[in-house]
Length: 338
Image (cartoon, rainbow, N blue to C red):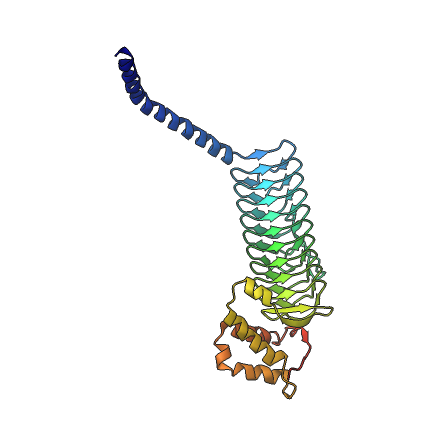
């Protein structure tokens, strides 16, 4: 009986103490969470870094040893500047960016470099410096604007515009692999993949979802259409229409980028329509004596094919390449089919 009474008393005590223990535990976890939040919002600047007192530094920023941050720089929340990286001139770095060892962002030039959120700038990359255009006039404003979620790998170089009225632009979610070069006044879209040593001359326009293999060179003022593929070692001296694949020196059309179209979710029906349209324009039957322009005009009358948005985009891409001031499309071999 005594043992039973003791057990009952113990259970009653636990019932009384449990709410108190639970409350204490909640307070403990809350204190830990608040401590983590304070730690995350605390900016760390290594004693060996040089940060100008006028620089705007966000919360939770980490600046490693031997970094420099200029007077006009703005560093967003939760950015990380690794050892020996530098942010110079009027440069804005969005939230959550990572700048790896030795990278240089911006320059002490008139104008501005704006880099969006969640970008990674690789080791020894040079982003937002003066262009290599000899027509650039010293003291003129020049601009670079980079979007969000880009990965710019080691030793890349991305230059500002050559004139105050223009801007070098890179969109969102691009992978720019090691040692690529994007020259002044280029316009790069979204979701592109540029393999190592891809070089873009000035004023090149790249649309969305393009893919270059390694060691590709693109001549200034060329346009690279969406969903296109540039084969390794290609020298591209004219426009690449949407959905197409080119290769060679000088690059020639080699058909549609079929694998890229499938990977990016185009339906089988869309791909079949594109193949049919491509064959009509670039692979005429042996008995066909019409010119390229005639075949393009004939395709424009194919109402059934033009109901496909992809075919309409392809035709538009080809036609605009022949407008005044444009370079025309890459050469193609007229393989006849019977």
